[in-house]
Amino acid sequence: MRGMSLSSFIASHIYTGSDGEQHRISRPAIRIALLGIIIGTAVMILSIAVIMGFKQQITEKITGFGAHIQVISLTRDANNQVMPILTTDSLKKVIMQTPLVTHVQPYVQTMGMIKTDEDFLGLQFKGVDEDYDTLFFHSNLVEGSVPTFTKGEASNQILISRNIAGKLGLSLGDKVYAYFVTPSGMRARRFTVGGIYQTNLSEYDRTTVVTDIYTMRKIQKWTEEQSTAFEIEISDFEQLEHVTEMLVEKVNHRVDRDGCTYGAYSIKELAPNIFSWLGVLDMNVIIILVLMILVATVTIMSGLLIIMLEQVNMIGLLKALGATNGEVRRIFANFGLRLILKGILIGNVVALVLATVQHYFHLVSLDAETYYISFVPVRFHWPFFILLDVAALLITALVVFGSTHLVSVSKPAQTLRFE
Image (cartoon, rainbow, N blue to C red; front, side, top):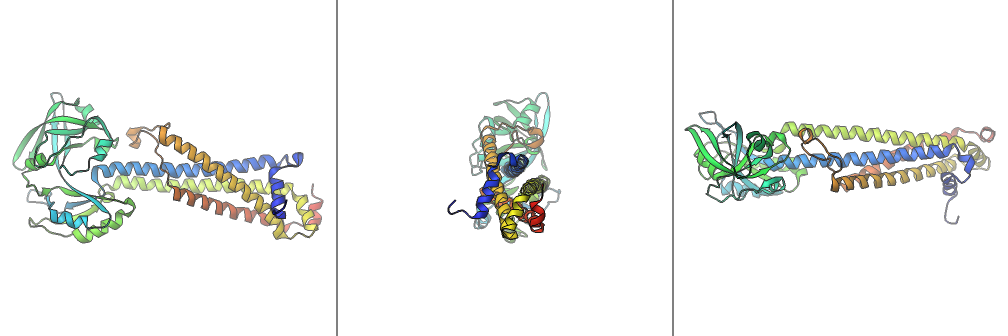
């Protein structure tokens, strides 16, 4: 065995169990320990992949409706209505100069009601212009098309959710009347259903109708510069708080010529309930990681102790021949590390295969009404997976080295007579 140390050679001999009958007790213990490491590793990786995938999917849905950051009005008029902000080119330029900001878009939001012959429903009408990023609605479109909005022109089309269409009995191409209550009285508009979307994010699907900003401004009697808010998209969601802070310094307490004060808020501040719920998932991940690492360490410790008890005569013989405690410990540490590395490797393969199958085929489904998504999502975050493997390896390795300390307390004369 040229190039192999004595500890590695003996550890390999114990690991392969070449003595047959002598290892009738240790072989099941080794298999159980290996299985515990495989299951623990696979469950940890799958848990991380699923939770991260779930958070990504829900975050994309929420930001699809409200972008990452919004500049909104903090002032109310004499009628206790929130005043519009002035979405001017100068303000847009100031926002676009902020690092990581990729897109800025105005919108006008108005409460209204769609009435059919059989029913009516109060809804939030969101007016957008030709520069609005409609990729999110295109990706969630189930029927028709996303209306094309032209600057300064009424499209007379609306994009509604499948939820709204079902409640009102509407189909693609149907013409409906929408009614709006304004300070100057009731106003009505006739729209055509141009498209139907479905995101399964019930809080928004139940209420959101998309149309052109021109019509919404005309209903409110606003100028072409007045809007409910500026929506801001950024390139890195992980930097959301940092970018929001920079925008707060630029925008907050800014007062326009109409006396309206502005404020910048992140989507986490605008939708705190959903993001608080997503934050709870992080605690669940921590609990799962701790439990699985405990399972892996307990099984590897149990298996190693059984091996050491079975090899107690060998330990006594090695000590009688002059081997030090450190040399004997290295034998079992070498054996334990082999077991850990094999278990982590197989666990990774199992987890990644299952995650890949789920990612492409969506075999495991969910109740969309409860979880906002119809399948279990997964996200492959390789740096996190590698960090998890390294942490698991270090923790279990420390357990192995701690367990091998038991060989130090044995005496050669007693261990040679052990049966």
